[in-house]
Image (tube, rainbow, N blue to C red):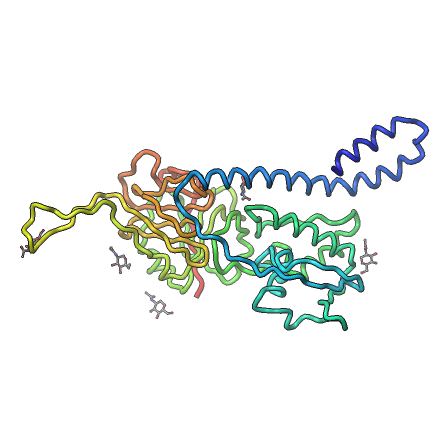
Length: 354
Ligand SMILES: *[C@@H]1O[C@H](CO)[C@@H](O)[C@H](O)[C@H]1NC(C)=O
Ligand SMILES: *[C@@H]1O[C@H](CO)[C@@H](O)[C@H](O)[C@H]1NC(C)=O
Ligand SMILES: *[C@@H]1O[C@H](CO)[C@@H](O)[C@H](O)[C@H]1NC(C)=O
Ligand SMILES: *[C@@H]1O[C@H](CO)[C@@H](O)[C@H](O)[C@H]1NC(C)=O
Ligand SMILES: *[C@@H]1O[C@H](CO)[C@@H](O)[C@H](O)[C@H]1NC(C)=O
């Protein structure tokens, strides 16, 4: 809408009688460019949402529903100006200081309040309003980009002061709190405070699960992958407790060997595995016979042969195998990049934290 208004204004400009107004309008146009960007974002988001719904409804795999946010109304006093928003808006970047301030388990305990009980921040209200608008846009995105955020400054010249506010609120990449759970896309390596790298190799080097016990002896693991050409970002990462990572898959299609004698029946199983994950803080880990390791987002049920080739929620699926016999299309993956077992363009990384 903003965009079409601009168009109208430009058309009006062709009328020479209105020429006097030109300078004013150009100033507004440069400011409004930012809003146009945001509008475009919202449009993109809507399309993505529709496709997500379509793909999950035609598939029988089930994803556990995201944790319901307690959404209450928060009164703020920003530099003397009252503002009202939802808790879910303030907590939309979960690893930010801002989100921690307003998280359920920190009900504004340590935050300064004015005499009406509104949380007080000593910032220019224009800056904060501008930030709030962008947080609202992020909230509408199905794949909320929580780690690579870039906030737009309200106007030229406000960069420094606006950034000071972002730093205070822990919303710049360097000040984001280190991730401690969940699956992440495009996670900034510099945000991994407290994590130690213990394994890194390209996909063409076979992965041996014993490295986890040998080199990555911590209570938590971060298992990640990325294209080798971008060392600043992990394309996909999953975080879990060491013991959860080993959640076993079941051999598929086991049947009793009818030929054997009654008291000594044996099971005959096919080489495929049926993995039924149980989401642990959002991550569904699986391990098939210590030969295939991976995760998906949430609780799902699927086959691996020897890796996971499913298209459902594919950006959030990682699978590594040490098996050498790989059927067409079912090799190692990093999100939607598949069959990477011979690739030196992609790498596996593991970090641990004690
Ligand atoms: C930023 O803050 C300084 C004072 O710290 C002030 O002098 C300056 O005008 C502010 N800049 C803008 C663009 O608001
Ligand atoms: C992650 O980064 C890649 C490469 O820059 C990009 O193609 C992809 O869309 C990004 N995904 C998300 C969810 O940000
Ligand atoms: C792993 O760490 C625990 C606790 O720090 C320690 O007790 C154990 O010996 C370590 N195991 C190995 C194999 O290093
Ligand atoms: C049971 O079967 C296994 C192999 O299937 C065999 O090694 C074992 O000796 C059998 N035991 C008895 C008591 O028949
Ligand atoms: C897998 O590895 C773990 C520890 O490294 C071991 O305790 C377990 O017995 C192994 N499982 C199989 C099926 O080999």
